[in-house]
Image (cartoon, rainbow, N blue to C red; front, side):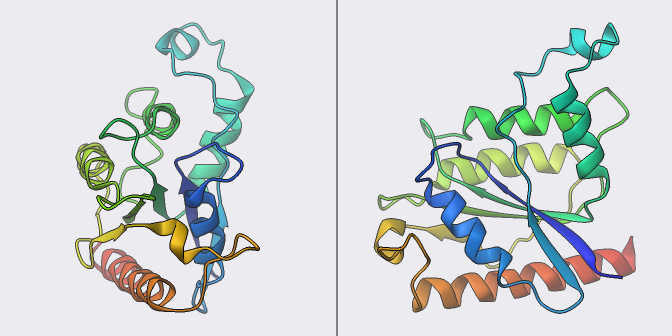
Length: 187
């Protein structure tokens, strides 16, 4: 049976670089792995009252049930104001609640950050890493994935161009799969 890896893009923008990278990464899945993009656009802002009062939005339930079937996660994120985009942090919060029922715990994770500028979303990458450590997710350490000037690696058809960035992403996907396999053996 294939291992299911969720790909979560931390941007809602139609022309999002993170979504374009996610589409490319889905096609890099090796045999025995099924990569799937997980939509986070419909999640209302997390409010604990929903869980406490038994009035959980349907979008939360759909997301939580979907993530319960996922074996690991690759987060692909831009950076907003030197940190994680609110929509991605919200998805993490929705999945981590109610307390004691986190859908994240033990799922191997990787963070691929990107930016049209030079810094490649370094701040978002590391802020996201802090949350994932707290959520008990084994995180890929190497290679660190910071994709600078990502717009230069996207073609006119919104696809990731052949070349160094694509090759590096494939190397990162392979490293993530190796981490996943090690976590599976030791988990």
